[in-house]
Length: 262
Image (cartoon, rainbow, N blue to C red; front, side):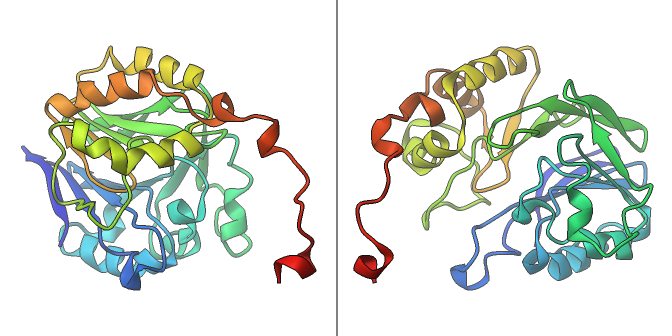
């Protein structure tokens, strides 16, 4: 069952959180359906592990034939490995960074994506969904080189991709985080490794402070709302990560040979 993030006057935001984690072999990932005026968009539709259940689950709330857009924050397999099946099963257009525009077709059979990919420019863009729009916000190097988050001005939800991700067996995506302190251990290791530098996080924090955000919803783990929203922005603004932490010790020829390791 999807988690209803927002539902008011025909505008809906639904989160599917348990479709790609069967047996624990794959990282947990959230997929999102946004509907406005009988038009819909899927955000970060996921890999083949999620496709069938997402398609069926979405169909209970929205006709796939009315899907106008697939929005991809970046091009990792847990984001769009199922692209070929979405290109077959719907008429939707894929929106993805221009950095990945010519890489995305590698997920599909020849010709499937022809005329159906719109490359998002580095500065972002407005993407129409029914009588509303989503805003593709620059989120480059968090963690991908061409990376976007998607802000919904109606629900005031920031779909933040990998930024804000929380991992661990005790993380429950259906439970909203309202205070950040106890949640930081579920996020810290991931962010220190996958975010490229504190400079990028500071630039991001300066950008999103100008938005009215009621909820930050990442691609992995639990959504944040209430006081946790501003607490998260302040936390990442001061976080050392990525290349900030690299030293000569991280760039050394391994001491053991393959035979010794075996």
